[in-house]
Length: 83
Image (tube, rainbow, N blue to C red; front, top):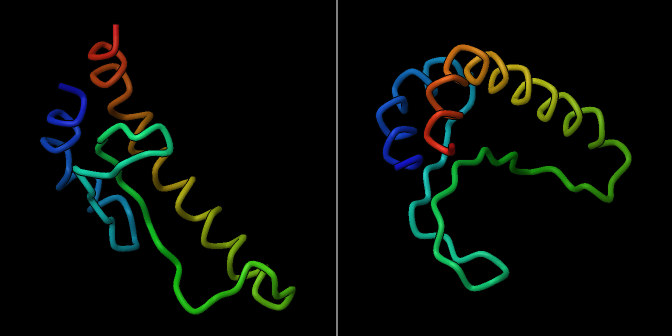
């Protein structure tokens, strides 16, 4: 139900995010469970290169701020689905 509701909010979420959102409804996690997930990728950087760190940090900061704004607006809907 949670994944379906998130799908209903997909357009809103993607409008809030200033970076392409990847939707994967058949991800196999470390425990072997099939789950749905959304994520954002930053390409052409290397975590182990110090000179890429400012780009990576800014990417994370921007995505967290954008996602938090979305979450704050719709958290009541999403939390009620879990209860």
